Image (cartoon, rainbow over all chains, first blue to last red; front, top):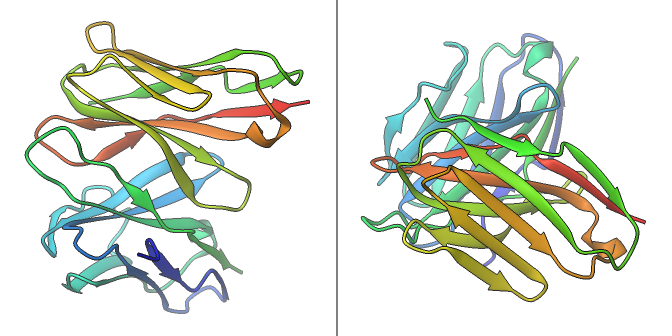
Length: 116
Length: 111
């Protein structure tokens, strides 16, 4: 398996524009996570899906952020409209969550977003 | 609310030294704890996963221990090498959820 695949790797956009980040989880994994990483706040969980259903979106900072998972192999994180303070690295991760303690998370390479 | 702290925030050591990175968490009701490595501009690479029922895990020169009752984990790196230079992050998964809560990381430089 190629691991968790994110696209694009880098995105530079102007303030006010819509940004869409994409993620393909590892095949067979049933949980997907979107994280944001900044120098000030470290890694923050934005939203978590289980079996394509959003379970916890309490980390989504504002209504400008939305995430979807239309099927088990694809998820998007959208920011509309984007603002300079959204500049960060956005990571997608997936795991095979099961009702035991052997759940291991695998991360993508991230999308570095710069909003100017 | 689970809070994860890593000490020290940064560490510089000469090559060959054995070193210990610390991770503490406030809520001991966890499924597991995972240690990651992050190189500059890169994603996170999983190093070790310790299940809640385990006390330690080993992989090559890495050894991670877990003491749930005291809310602590340590990552031991033996005979450090310049290639070990990276940021090391620990993350816990709370029981009843599958959310990974991360520490702030320890930035390691092996000279």
